[in-house]
Length: 336
Length: 291
Image (cartoon, rainbow over all chains, first blue to last red):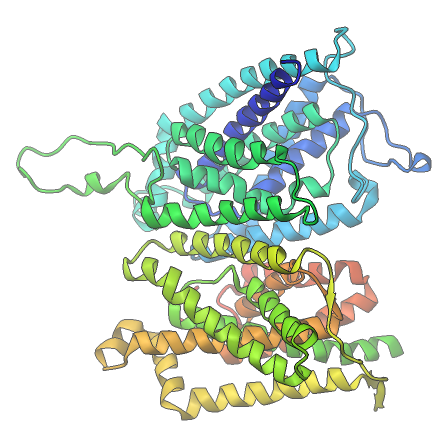
């Protein structure tokens, strides 16, 4: 019992964090159709920046060096991490989102992510290169006298509160006129532009809002683990969030919940506790990655709308045209 | 200054590898009209084929390389027929195809890792001592790679301009529907295109890993977007544009490695990609309707 409860609490934390991440990608891709193939970069941005705001100053002489190091309380550091990720979303969006075909978005996001990964890993004065940030005190420990297990339960609660706030943000965007505009652009960019919608601007907003949620998720991971380095955000991690969104169902946030439970918790996190096969330690993670890649393909093949499909939104049908499909009915399905 | 001239020589080697890879990608992109994000793993897979055939099955390296390229061509056709065809024939939205190839890259990379392990591999090849050719100093292997790329480019040019297959590929690249109503068997041409793409990816992958000496399952990850940069700079679906862009990018990245730092070599290619996208997104040789 002493082992199972902390383990379940850890899984709950990952479930809550991956919910937030999947909703973030949902805003970018599910709502607005932005192909962000470097989602994990925004997660890392949130984790790093929340880390350097909450950590003490790094010192080159001790081998730990990073920018800032302000010793701020963790909740404020979390907000700063989210803001930094949102800013990065705008910067990458400015390069990636233009009126060209969607291949370019995918190429540019993937390339930007690779370059940022290389820069952060090699340029030590920023976030200590490959060694990464480490030594973050458990948040709230300066006010509360608790041991590590108690902190884990506290963190479950904190993540749950943050998750509920993120849920309201994601739902609010989905049901707002802005969300409707995002879906219209996703379905038919030219038609939306013909109605006077600025597709580049709206997609930039979606990109940065999604990045903010990614940053929140990254900051929560940073606070829980207390350390973060480039091994934690290889490009493979982006697939986990993508698979969660596609498997669960894009365009609605309940799909994100189901997907993050199936992919991120059952497949990705729970299998980390299977003991390694003797003589071939990397086999289980390798098979797990293949499963995640294959699940992306299989879901698009068998049930492209995911486990929970996006609800078709019905609009008032003209009584003069009984039985005829109006163009409005097409909205809500999958577009290019 | 001497180092800079030297690096132009290395630039020719990189340009040769890049030309092989980007011509392969752009031919397929032109004909099928979607980009293959798993292309980088094709390069790696072929390198592992060649390694397995030469060091474990003890075939002569050249024979192993040729067999590996042909095998990669067959694998590329099998993936196109077995996976991509399902989505193409149902006219799935473009993003389905992009996500599927993205997922494929994860599957192939981990498959390679599961079979051959995550560690670094090498070929049993002696690189040879460098020869001094004018201002350049290149090893015989590097010279062979440059020669191979030139031969391959001439062969691609002859295929595109002289054979009915090449003409049909160009026709499909310009307008698939028009090509189809003109009596071109588009399915057969697509299959051949995938085969040629796979072979070129194989050649490029083996050439890349011979020049870097050691390689692991993720070796082509960062090279993939140098290939993307060359394809976009050259204009999507434009093999001659890709050749020119590969020459430019190959020399620019190697010279910058000397002038700036070799750590940031790929970043120069990225800057080139961004500049091209902002200034001339249609590439050196524009294709109408494909930007």
